[in-house]
Image (cartoon, rainbow, N blue to C red; front, top):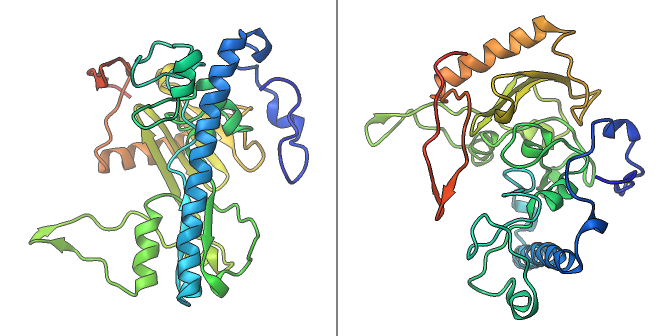
Length: 305
């Protein structure tokens, strides 16, 4: 981010959330006019996609309302990760691969049409994830923390309100099972299956507090574990180094407290590796995201922790 952001509809974002060094992206004003136009078009395509999706979700809601089933319908809307920064500050295209290509003239006019495929890059990902650290691919807040919007008629205790209790994707199954009054099976086609990993989030919907628990995440060597206000996180480009944050006091992960609270870090690390072993999560020292015609090359596994 450049300058002092005041982007929140609920007021100015505190400057204390932006104490980290500026991301090494070129300033917008340093780009050529063609680059600015290309990048603006990329974001406008994304915005158009969001608008079309919103309109069509609205059509479903209108039909439910028309049929008198809206208040009897549980709607959950969320994103699976933060904004996508692939692959560098200027994005990439299906036709040109990871190499950046500035579109002008007829090529610019063709952007967003059927058969095209455009990523908007690191710069826009930073904007979309403000004020959090990093973006999709990472286990920092910008990569894993996204809003979840829930509608369930009069069953929602605090309509239009905010609830900051964390949940995770494995909670979806548990929630649906409880909603349906169903029993989760112990086997499928004669084969034993794993028990549900999540918890129902209906207590949150009903205005109650969820019990404290560990929440885990891992993606391409990036990993994290959270319990209550404490979060232990590691980014694969830093190797095997952990960072510790108090999310309640430092949601943007600016102040690494691992040197100050080693016991908490050790507790979370132990819990993470127990979960990783149980969940067959691979351990990595380094991962290379090298792509060749959309095929991912092998990555190297490390044997020590």
